[in-house]
Image 1 (cartoon, rainbow, N blue to C red):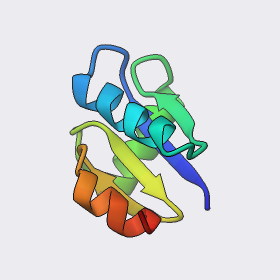
Image 2 (cartoon, rainbow, N blue to C red):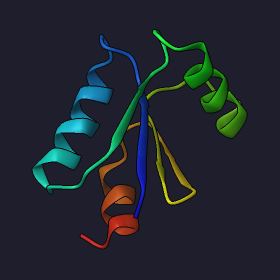
Image 3 (cartoon, rainbow, N blue to C red):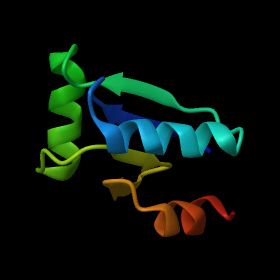
Length: 76
């Protein structure tokens, strides 16, 4: 299962989401939208929102750090 997370370095919810994924030994690809216009454009195309983090789990999107939804999608 491919996990992509769109973040910025100063986002506390982004840090929490990454820590959650790491704690469960789930590999993910991070996309810093503050450093990459391409990543920002991808995120906006997927969500039409600017709220972070955006977590894409095999095409299912989680906007913000919603631990319950992440656990559901990841089967935890």
